[in-house]
Length: 260
Image (cartoon, rainbow, N blue to C red; front, top):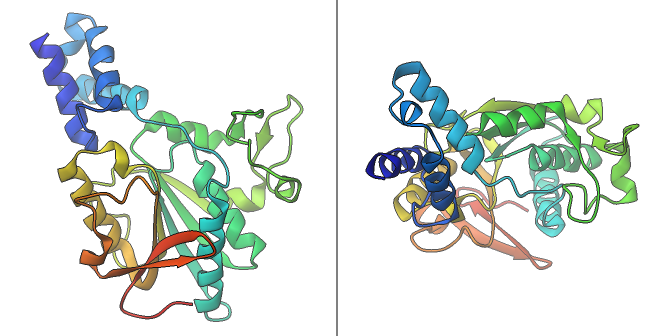
């Protein structure tokens, strides 16, 4: 059992997962089911094993247009602060299977704003699903909050699933990335969105992740976190952000310049 625990802890450390949380529990179970020769894998085989464990353990519970009020507030602030003809850059960190990254692109397009959404995740399997851009429908599906006006961006396929329209797919680039590492770009994103990701991390990893996320936001830019992500030791104000609440939604604004 010691070798199983060691492998599970190693995987937890890679993604900052709390070993005592649900991801840690899933990793212990997955490692316990491995044959001994795989547990002792090394080199490229071990890297492949760790990637497989991460794919199976990370949380992929997400859906299109989660918390529309927060997305609407973000869109309003971006539109009011964007010079005419400018292009906006948004980072969707921990985008899982792509629903959030595509939702952000739809928000921009519906507001007449040009831009690019960079969607990143540590799970290769989740990114493969995002690139395929085919989603099941139904009451508890990723499309459960899709409304009639959204269907122009999310048309139905012949088999009853939804796909992402080409103009939206063209606005999104998907790359493998760990939010504990250096961000894709530093100090350049108009908005960084990382919702319901930090909640699964241990305290040290949450602190590191927030520092990385904050460093990616340009002066006056926006930081969107989930309600469960903002808990000690997380303190966006310590990184120069101020909280903004409007119409029942909240986010953080980098304090160098007033936005909206």
